Length: 422
Figure (cartoon, rainbow, N blue to C red):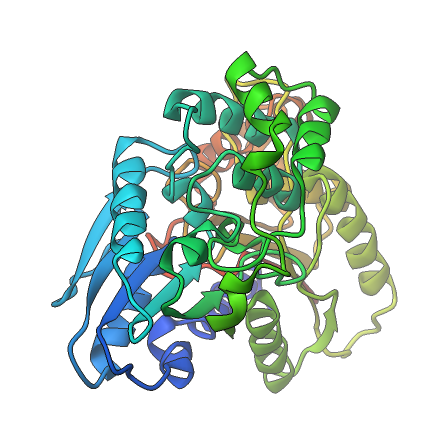
């Protein structure tokens, strides 16, 4: 198999993985029966608009609502208003949208239905601070958490406790209406309380844990935030709270679906598939080096004529940013570390992309590497190891034309990493 053939295969497999989480396919089977009263759609996340359109296409009866999604991720809906806002750092539009959603939820009665469509990214997009806090305070803490290398669970523990709508507070506002949540998971473990910081589900985390996380990552907080987190009256609703008696959660798609679809297609194409699962976490560069060792072992074990080996994994790595001027993303950082670990092995190519089409804050989904990657980077006048230390992986892959740019996919089941050996 040529280098070009491997790259084509990897891109095709990524597309198959994304299609496994298409809201048009995965949302309709989870729709509830219409209520006696009215139906309000409340959608938040990178897949919010496409999930809302899937509901409109299949819903029997009147419907209205709001879907808040990331800039560029909107789609046209007939009855549901689509609002685009900032991600990963919230902005005024997200704050206003979240306030409107909360106000709409409070008007629901016992015969009404809140049909909540929740996907990854919703935590930043629902940027309504808790009473007494400001959006600027939330933004500063959010930026610091993003740069700290904290895993998504820790980040969302803090976000829940600084929010007026997350951590179950949306269900609290809508009670006694029936709450039917359809989720698309982008988090390792698929915990509904972590997806978009769980606006409709109970929160088992505590203010004390949020404070401990802020202290652990040395994140400075203003006095107002410290006072808020120290007041037990501000605790999020817990599993025993009766507001959750009329609430249910239904998982429409998850990272394992994407990994499974790709693994199945890999086998169909004649590959020996090694699946590492959909819950990989850790520093992106450390995961890159670990998977480089695994790929080299697979290559060493192959004999002439053996089938290719496809190593598949999903999950969400983290990047501890030490050089804020660098331009990167967790998938590009993983790949640059992987390339260094593979040291130009002639039989190995790899792809790492975010299923939402955006790796970090840039406009690419991820990138590709092959046997000639390091030599081409050096020919472009760049030192790959030095650029990795500078958190500048995007710039490296941009310089050699190896970025993968899909545009917004309008779904989000986390990252897909593929290594093709042979």
